[in-house]
Amino acid sequence: MSSNELGDFLRSRRAQVSPEEAGVRTYGVRKVAGLRREEVAFLAGLSADYYTRLEQGRERNPSAQVLDALSRALGLDADQEMHLYRLARLVPASRGGGREPVSPMLLQLMDTYASTPAFVLNRTLDILATNRLAEALFSSFTDTDNLVRMVFTDPAGPEFFTEWHRAAQSTVASLRLAVGHDPDDARLTRLVDEVSAASPAFRRYWEQGHVRGKTAEAKELLHPDVGALSLIFQAFDVRDKPGQQLVIYQAEPGSPSDHALKLLGSLSATKYRDREDADFTFPDRS
Image (cartoon, rainbow, N blue to C red):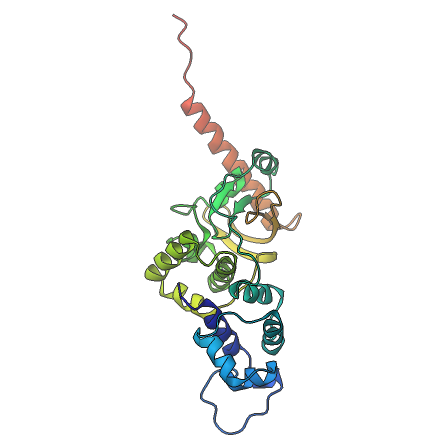
């Protein structure tokens, strides 16, 4: 990862805002995408020199007032603004969200969702736990330990995620939020370096600097056993385990995807019973 995440984020956001969106008049040929540094400085009420030092990493301690002004100038949404504050160290770094165990009560609750895939993620998108239907949903993947690897380095990813580019961008945007929570997280650094080396697509999305937390979103998936699935996922913060999120996939009741999920659940239950029967040993009655 970069040693100047704050500057990189400002630069990436500046490149995404057109002069028209910011209400800036332009003259002649522009050589940069988005806004120029001096235009952002003007919109935020800062000197061009000060803003340049922020982007270059020579100034690393902006005030809350400066961040507020930059948020308005760049049109940041709530996730992006909070990410900016975390990168500037004006929000205490959060050390939660590692590979902490999922609470037994939450595991028990997930097991009651017989027709709903459910799994738990941490901030680096490690999959910490799945219920039986989520395990069946992800059965085509070589490994299901981390969502980033599943999307970018597992051969099943591009086929399973029908709208792969959308899923890829969303995954990277979620992972980038982890940088603000703990920029010094060695686990995060290793993951970014590993997937960057393996996937040019990941590198491109990472360099774009988008940040967005998981809330609710439509997913188009293709499962090898039951076919196409149009699902909606919702993510919920686990209050007693900061950094963990419970993600639940749902289908429209009565839809083909709903029937496909039910079929997948039935197939999974059959495989589970067969596995139990294979492991069962009759007692010795001699």
